[in-house]
Image (cartoon, rainbow, N blue to C red; front, side, top):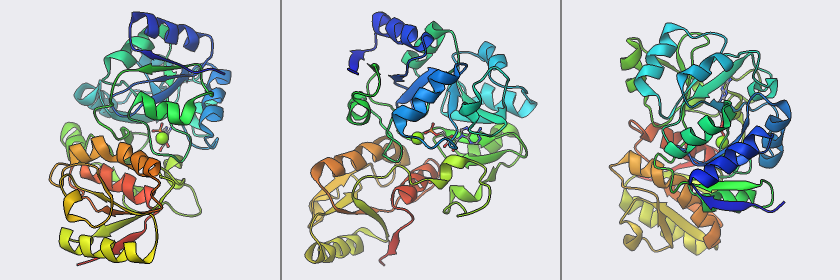
Length: 341
Ligand code: AMP
Ligand code: MG
């Protein structure tokens, strides 16, 4: 299959909508990362997402809507907490997990009775959903296990030949996937993102809980609340290790490592490259987690292209959006952390 790449336009968005209505899979820009979209009400279309991504069948998909009038097609309940959070954060990078409506293809929920739903804050995504006229299931548009794509070029790296169309809407400004909150029971953050736990608690007027998987590795056995969390995720081809400690200790550490093994690279904060004795790719400013979120996945892909074999990354502080940055980096590193003080 030949993959077309088109800049977002009335013509491109209409073509995307037409392909989506006929059950095809199309990559679309969103404010978080690029999504691999298909009609969430069409089981065959949803199956094509799993095939294109190489995604395990027990990892559920998020459904994207263009307006709250589409909710009735997606969810079987809309409790007051959902209304509060939707009013506060939609359109935006927040996914709500609720009981699933009957018209949504069961594979979207990957065996769960629930569905994750959000309204993205990206004009191109909203336009394509509205033109398609159906809710769109759309996981990140990477091959399963790879870093999420934040540009159309990243999507092509993973999806060329596998899908008919990529719509280019520029860089995804947020850079990490949506915050996922379950409202199936007590409000619980299943995956951290741009919307922080403090912001959620404030909007709800009640504390939100953090699922254990937000901070640590998912349980090896037994049920997990958010199936996606148990897989190797966001990972570059290189072996990634996070290094905790101040810059001078990090610089000394990577200098020693580079004498021991070939292909050692650093993933650092902006401006630190010149103080390091190994090739380095910056991923954001040390004191600005939003820039870290925006640069994280592009940096991981750049390291692969450079041929890095061992990557040592500066550990982000982890406050606010930094919680999501830390969560993604820990998973990309399969929880390998070294402490250098
Ligand atoms: P992605 O679309 O690649 O950003 O991944 C979607 C993630 O959202 C999944 O891996 C889950 O962690 C989460 N998710 C989606 N739907 C549900 C659901 N019904 N219940 C729990 N978690 C969900
Ligand atoms: Mg993903």
